[in-house]
Image (cartoon, rainbow, N blue to C red; front, side, top):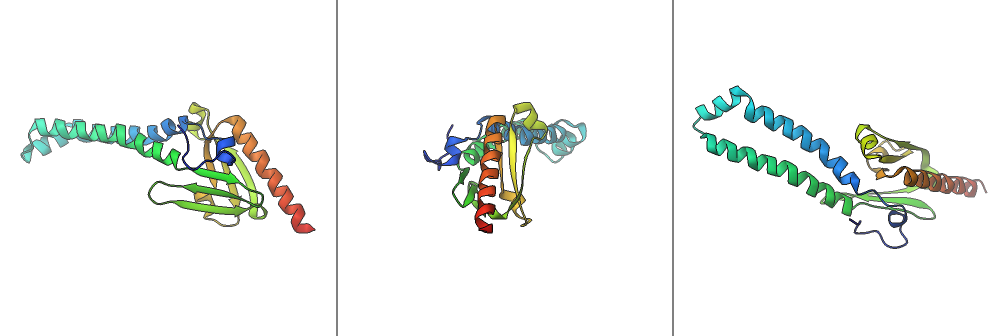
Length: 176
């Protein structure tokens, strides 16, 4: 699986996201909705309430299967599209990050505005051996988009080193 906007010389091509990010991002919604749907359709009270309102058991089963289909196919399709439209590039002066399928978010962050770079893992990242690289600036909204999630350990270290090098260059150019 490849990212659509990543050209040969873009950072996202040279230091790519891991495709297992799609599985990791799909599992959470799938488990949550499977749990909720199971509670709704298999708790004794809700089945009786729905049958009491004249909905036959065959229709209830059909609704259940359609919901399961939606959960187990729509979530992964959304994540595949999100992955394919994910773009980032480290240029000489700034980092560009573009995310989103329908509503695209874009951040262009100058290296001299970067205050901190953090590499971390959440629970699912540890299971899938993925890392997130967060770029902190003084702007509180940077946390929403200024992170690259779903890279390998090696690539997270490469990204962090490249970012730190570019931040140091920006700092030395500013003081001259």
